[in-house]
Length: 344
Image 1: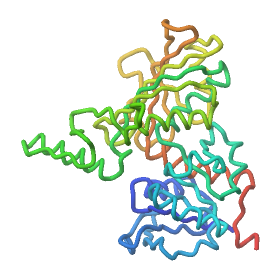
Image 2: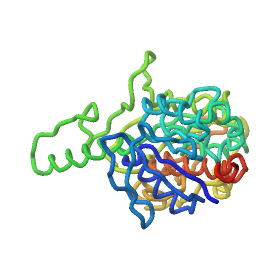
Image 3: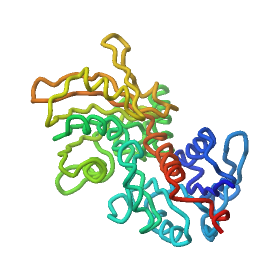
Image 4: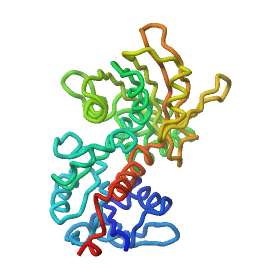
């Protein structure tokens, strides 16, 4: 007997990707239920070669659902995730609503799988921020080998990180530029077409943005609280795929060749690093792929034990939907959850 899986926010970019990945990876589901707000009731979404009709989240009974993949935003998750968890269904939440709750594990399976054991306190597991997830997949094996002291990261984040509205705005503005129509900024604070915007999420008192703060807080919670992190997060006119230029300072010596070897054998990592034209990965190649790609690995001569690297990943997959499904797979693989109908 397989599991009953609900996907909340099934009509959004990440929700649709969750449905795709559940089918692609052959998750042992007897039934997959797409859910969204009442205004999306009856909308059709794809699950493999099947078409499913979206049901309304409001009033839905989760008492016989095993896992809920939640991708409907922080406010919806704050309201619904505790209610769903109390019905015995495990919520894997993609928003930032529960990431910093000490009773909620924040998980990237390649990074801190053992932390999942505490999920029963709330029956909620949090997915990290998309930019943090791919960075930590690359940093974890290096931290194990040489102990990271400090990370300086600049992100180049695609518009899909801002949802369908972000993607639509880039398309609309790009078209407007070519046909000499007025360019209007609605979703972003400035024009995104043929531009970059050093501002993601709200500003905080110290001048950082919330997106930058998330990368700091989540790295400390998931990898090591002693690591110092500073981030600059930038929105770029790319539809899918986040890129990161990462500078890392280690406690122990580590060469670029050693790092390349370690990362080549690390779960979730794919090293493409040839010192020639095109011998690196860009977000275009990462779209639709599961791996975290690492290129441009080189030593930083300005600090002791320093390395630079370029890290790219599909933010809708590893940064969100894939990671959520991998958490569900981890629950099953470790025997932490069983189909409730079978258990009864």
